[in-house]
Amino acid sequence: MLLKNNVDSYVCSQSLVMDFLTAAQLAAAAAYPWIGRGNKNEADGAGTSSMRIQMNKIDMSGVIVIGEGEMDEAPMLYINEKLGTGNGPEVDIAVDPIEGTTLMAKGQDNSLTVIAIAKKGCLLHAPDMYMQKLAVGPKAKGCIDINLSLTENMKNVAKALEKNVEDLTVMIQDRPRHEDLINEVFAAGARVRLFSDVDITGAIATALDEMEVDILIGTGGAPEGVISAVALNCLGGDFQAKLLPQSDEEYKRCIKMGIPDPEKALTMDDIVQTDDCFFVATGITDGMLLKGVQKNENGKTLTHSLVIVGGNNKSSQYVNASF
Image (cartoon, rainbow, N blue to C red; front, side, top):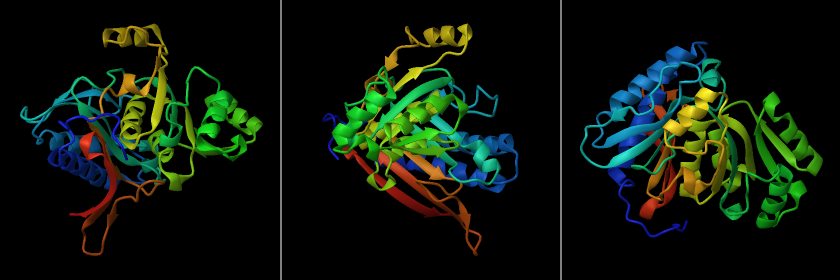
């Protein structure tokens, strides 16, 4: 995979990547006892507490620039929270200790722990709110425009992928708010792949040929959008978005946090302003990308993770670990 720019990797050092991988693994392991127990807040609290403790051991000056939890008042790593020892690189962090808490609480697939890290000042700093999203893989990079209709984007992506529109697969969250998008895909003769939660998985899937997903579109949480953008940036894909303030209060908060036009279309470069970034995820329950946490017969915890690195060390790999 080629770099967009030849940059010095300040954040993407092996030691820092491994430190955050450990934080994701331990958070997933902490959530494991709560799988299928119907209490998502207790699970979120366990994952969050574990992640906070581990991140505070990392040699860095880290700040949460966008996090999960404010919309549903769940336990969270809160926006502007400072983490780390205070030594080492200054970094922005976007995080969700348990992405898919409802899935995990019901014992369903596709819940995971996710973290995105970039050089300080390079990730979108925004409230935990709704965001309209459009994602594609590397072959369709530069061919999407969130201001155009889905049909127009499908035509442009199909051309870039050297496919017919009818051969496209569009991933959309199964929600009433997306009924028009789903019908638009059907009208174009293309395929819809619905999912219940965790759009980060769908966004990343657009960049992985074996997943057979060409486009992800829909409205979901802004933290997941920023995290998805980091992963796709490292993979060479493309991501565009619009914040969707639901009230005057949310609109004003965006402005207070440095977003002068909260409803502006955001390109990848608006959301992730560097190639010096990386993404880590660890499965909690089995899913499209990752296997869930398991306990073997010796009582050891087994985890399955995905690490996607940008900068001069651009790479992606799956990591199995036991402890």
